[in-house]
Amino acid sequence: MTGNILFYGDNLDILRRHIGDETVDLIYLDPPFNSKATYNVLFAEKNGSQAAAQFKAFEDTWRWDQDAAKTYEEIVEGGKNIARTLIAFNELFGKNDMLTYLVMMASRLVELQRVLKPTGSIYLHCDPTASHYLKILMDASFGPKNFRNEIVWHYRKWATGKYAFQKNHDVLLFYFRSDSRKRTFNQLYMERAPSTLKRFGTSKIVSGHDETGRRVPSRTKQQESEGVRQDDVWAIGRVPPIKQLFPTQKPGPLLERIITSSSNENDLILDPFCGCGTTIAVAQRLHRRWIGIDITYLAITVIKHRLRDEFGEGVVDYKVKGEPIALPDAKVLAEQNPYEFQWWALGLVGARPVEQKKGADRGIDGRLYFHDEGLGGKTKQIIFSVKAGTTTVAHVRDLRGVIEREKAEIGVLITMQKMTQPMRSEAAGAGFYESQWGKHPRIQILTIEELLAGKRIDYPPSRQVNVTFKKAQKANKNESATQEPLL
Ligand SMILES: C[S@@+](CC[C@H](N)C(=O)[O-])C[C@H]1O[C@@H](n2cnc3c(N)ncnc32)[C@H](O)[C@@H]1O
Image (cartoon, rainbow, N blue to C red; front, side, top):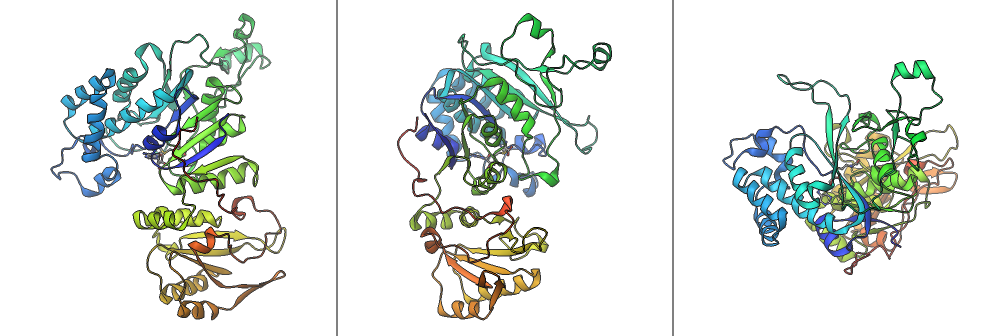
């Protein structure tokens, strides 16, 4: 049976290479979509009439380019309903950003349909900007007869925009994969209306409307009379910004409701756009197996932290595939995408990435906290700087300046390149941080080669276990990408 896997990479490629036909019980996907963007951004032709900043959010992903054209042709050549649908969209929009987005989605839906078991379900999370087009794509991929619900996730947020009603909902399109008699669907129940509660008391409530509905295993008449069947408008609060691990993080209770109703223990759940891993964390808590895929290393690093924080060090059994495990892979990542490289390198030492170029955090790529004075003692910090390219003694000097400014105990420079003698001397000049465990160099330089070989930062162990910032485990050699299908 497939265990839990976190994939780093493009989900189209990973689905095609690693996930077998009819192997997944439930799919939840929450593709990136900038709901702040206006319709105009997506429908604009390439004549430069839109502000450059507006386009930026879509620049990498949704511009019509050779890749989009190739994917479009592949789908069209494949025939079937999805091909006819894309041809119609092409007629309607021309080669604009909306078509690019829909082509991207169509190619993924073809693969998701393939990997879903006949008894399985899929939930596509989107917002009203494109939900009507996506429903047509879903009909083309899964069949209109398998459409179950358009779920409205209703939430509250600060007032935005004028000349329109406040936009306070997302849409979840729920489809079965087939009309198999064995399709999984566990009925959930909601709270009774206040007037009913007043009359009959609370003893018969099966679940709360604003919380996860509790599953009622079999649907006897008597049980149905015990609560009102869960409807398709879900009022669930958004994750408050202060608690967010990720800007697009979805609330756990939303995923609890989906996973409880559409899967059973030990089932395999797939989230191909897993972000900071809400689906994964909830699936884990509800004793399901899971596969998460994300194209940014930031997401993978955040999920590793999240699993450690929520379940404890080493408790969750999972593999990470697609991350560099040898120097040549790391070099490729450093050249192709310095930010991804940075996030990956910080993950190796258990540090948390810091958002870039925010005035106050100048020169800081990551942080890690420790407590060496026991319960109630001061929080100490290690500051990280990661260099994918040329590294000189000036970088070591800068880091010394940053740890002085931030009053940090230790500064760590992670480099792709080997250390030079002047860098070594500059680091030595910074002296030591002393703890009851001994002396720890105030400036430490670690190369990627050393980290991959298992070398770690020299700092005192936390006396009080700090679940958020414990030391990362050494990268597991088995965590390499494989070519053969997994399932
Ligand atoms: C809206 S977020 C998902 C948030 C997630 N539901 C959560 O609760 O954290 C979309 C995610 O999809 C990822 N992504 C975008 N394109 C991708 C691709 N082609 N393959 C895999 N992941 C992708 C982004 O990096 C981002 O983390």
